[in-house]
Length: 276
Image 1 (tube, one colour):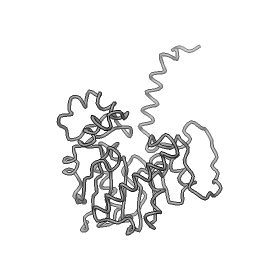
Image 2: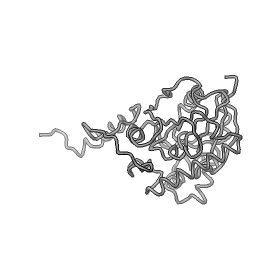
Image 3: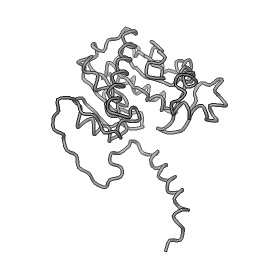
Image 4: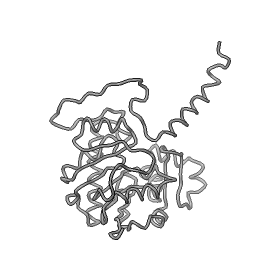
């Protein structure tokens, strides 16, 4: 006979599970299975589409998954070109936080660079390894990546620094380490322009609704440097763009800030200083 009923222990068990999930250094694949088997799929004429559960909330159908990948890569390409950088000149490119390869799958049309993707989700990476003709590796929430110094010409990360809070500078320094001098880092952030969009053209988005009703936002929306709603890898982080620029590690020079380059997010283009 149980001494304590399930309805009393369930909240504690759920909380302990949440703590354990947050403590993980990466997200294991097949988390609910005690054993599993992988098989290499047969070759196909076109790149396969990942299952819906691997869309990472970026799409609700295969068509949207492909379309938004092309849109975001085209947007990045334009921002980089306007900043004086050509994807065609890169020899190695890293997609930092690639998920199921929504963007990286579009790059071979624009560059012959060696392409790499990393993500903390092992399930996403395993799918990419089995299905996409690029190179992939599982990373962790610890700011360290499995590459030698000065390895990449270009690193891009769409909607990753929107979830990085306490160790932002450490991650920027790690990305600088593996970036060649003169190399480019393209990243997207939530900034003050994003919040204006949340009150207008994007007001019906789930994140806009979540933020606009949050007590922390309501109290500090008139002026903030950094606003964090939620903690850990699920956090939503908003920056005053001037603050983000002012707090950059000195290994980078600021090249551009482009609003609405990635949906409602602004793109930041940084260049690693040649002398570092």
